Image (cartoon, rainbow, N blue to C red; front, side, top):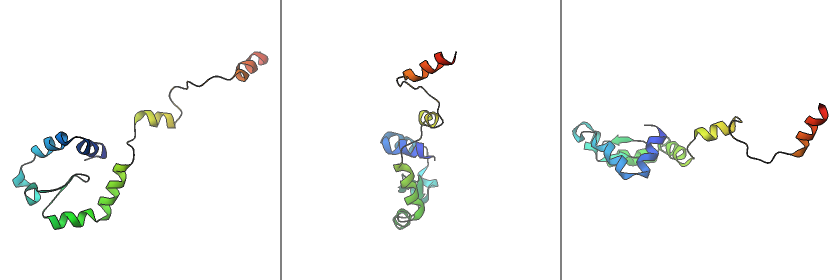
Length: 100
């Protein structure tokens, strides 16, 4: 799962329950009892899950989830697209008139 889907799972318990309902417990490791929400992974035992939470991949995932999600508006602003509602300076209009 992508970070945006994991954020939705964390924000809404219902979203997570709907996802878990689509999986058969018999097909999941540990009968679906040990689930890491941040990484969206199932584990065989509590011991394996604890070892996972101490690991580098889990900590990296937590760091990614703590960052603010990227938006299209922010991406466009970074490349200079979008609206500029700032006050226009008088110098630029005067310079255009003088050049004519």
